[in-house]
Length: 500
Image (cartoon, rainbow, N blue to C red; front, top):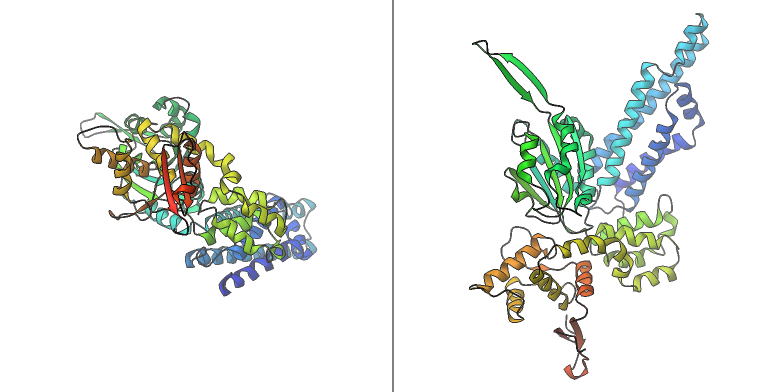
């Protein structure tokens, strides 16, 4: 699937790897300069991963920005290798012609020379950049958009909230980590802090759980005492420009946002808070500028890239050809969910045979990934009110990938008595529907379109089917008389055989 540009870059990566692995002269140069060999091993691993990405990635994965950034990074690696070779040659020539004392000769080979320190630092930066590029390639458009937002508030002192919203396993945390570890983002913020919110869900999260973390921000404040024109002391507190990530915020009630903002006292710093959440209403509860970024499921081609990379690993391309067709069909069943693709790949790498992969293909995807995704889905489900739980479960009667028209679904809920009695049941039903969408339990097919249709993600459908199996069912049949209904069945959806 690689383009000519991909192939050119792949060749460049292979040349660099050959210098590290096969070129004894280069290794001699590296040892002569007393550089850190462990960094070279890390660089080798990152180059192998980049080679892996270039082989598996689709054209859509690697846009011009990604290719240009990689091209420049490889150029810098090449340039560093050339500088190492030049420095090693200089050391060798000076050593051969050295007529000074032994201590001076020793200085030439000291592991603490400026060249060694600078080169080790350069290599660490390049390792970080290649790690970033190898992780970003499937979400580069998302990262570009969010990085632009992070940097567009230069000169704006108001604290900014960026909320990354999407269903379980879609890659919210991974995307936030890409931003958090981005070299340019590191340079922008004086202080960075990551808080994993998932550990606080057993109890209601009050601001006290953040005290230790937040103090690490406020403790960096600089207090200036100045005398005004009348001789009075004017106290000015300068807070650091910080990036705070609150990962996996369950809902708007999880944090006392007012107290958090007061404690940060950051309205004048131009700082940013990134929130990852399944609930798009979370940032709306904060009295500050906010931007919601909806993370969409990956394309099937992207899922296949993940499956292939995790199943085969680096330099196993010869195993791909006879399994690719089956693998692509398996990737389609992941329905654009990166977590599902990674989990499925863990099964596929156990055996590289067509029979084994075909056996995985015919298995229900829910059976393969249930142990990974169910705990998070269960927490979302448990946080719903009783009426919302019933409305969510009811959606399992529709077939997978069935287009859900909001007004039709609401009328069905009302007809089945699932909407609480009120003067305006239709309005209440619409609020139910909107809340399920907000919580990423129903998927909006397009953003910003009031007439947009909706659907339930395949794995959410599997989960809804599991929790409602005792009384909700859908059947495919040519004749109603052939359908068997259990005593506990309350809701039934019948599809005529042969229809979609």
